[in-house]
Amino acid sequence: MRSLLRRHWFLAGLMVVVSVGFAFSEPLRELPNMAVLRNGIVVTVLFLMAFPLAFGDLHNAVRRPAPALLATGMNFGVLPLIAWAISLLAAGDFAIGINLMAAIPCTLASAAVWTRRAGGNDSAALVVTIVTNSLCFLVTPFWLLWTTGSEITITIWPDPAGKGLSLADMVSKLFVLVVLPMALGQLARLVPKAGDWATRHKFSLSIVAQIGILAMVLLGCISCGLKLRSLPTDQMPTLFSFAAMIVLVLTVHFSTLLLGAGIARRLSFRRPDEIAVAFAGSQKTLMIGLAIATEFYTANPLAILPMVAYHVGQLFVDTAVADRYLRASHKANSQPGEKTSENHPPANLS
View 1: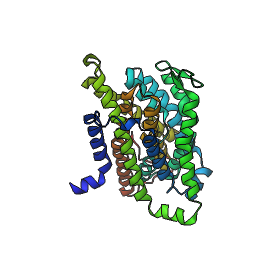
View 2 (view 1 turned 120 degrees about the vertical axis):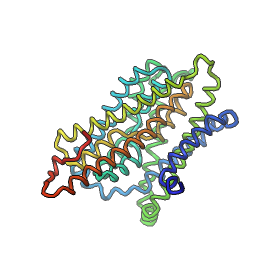
View 3 (view 1 turned 30 degrees about the vertical axis):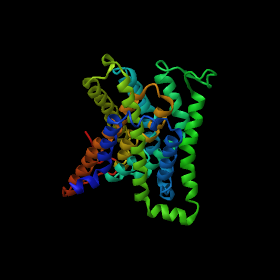
View 4 (view 1 turned 120 degrees about the horizontal axis):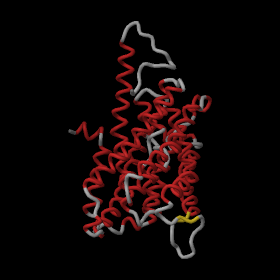
């Protein structure tokens, strides 16, 4: 049991904070309203995730940009389109949450970790992380304008009466909350001792950052719990609607993963590059999605549930996919006399 908790402590913590947030939403109701706390957690987590990243080993990914470009296109282009189509099968906050989940950038850590676990090109996955998170302050608001604009009043500039969601506000706040902390994390590495310290303590910093993510999930679940308590009985989401929402978000993730891997294979990408496209093209970060939801979608607190479901689901699904890649690779390598081509490997997901 102790060994199991060590390996899956984040998932266990996720279940705990979700339960606490919903069960004790009333006594904890003031926490989500504390902007300093909420924004401080976001800035701290993103700084800690960027600080240990050393980009000196990314020259190969930059010299051969095709895998990173394809994965970025999948993550910021194809996946939101798939999610928008699938969100038509949902309604209300769940539909908004599916589109919100799709508009945010790639994960800050797990895409590269899972790519490496499966024997893939983790440098290409890191490039996707850098590009999507650096551009999210421009790309994400415009996806949300198109996919959620019919359900939420979105204006270009702030409304004098304070009504609606301002695109300019979202762009500027995402730049401050996301891009600046990541830039500062990288600038801090210019101090040699600081960079060496961050590299040596990468694992510990990642643990602290994941604790911060759990804190953000807690704030979001408190808001969700308060909303659920205030809803009339006839407006409460049913168990069926929850289950249907989980199926929909997992469909978005897995279909994008399979499509990315299939396109990479058709383009004769090397197997490590195919793996990078599969994971980096389909994973989404929870941190930024929660920050946007709690800042701009306060009237739709249930919208965080698809994001939480997507994040947990991608961890489970991608663990199984990575293990499948590894098993296929070991099987191919263990068969004597069978030659494997670098561009056309026998291991795949089909």
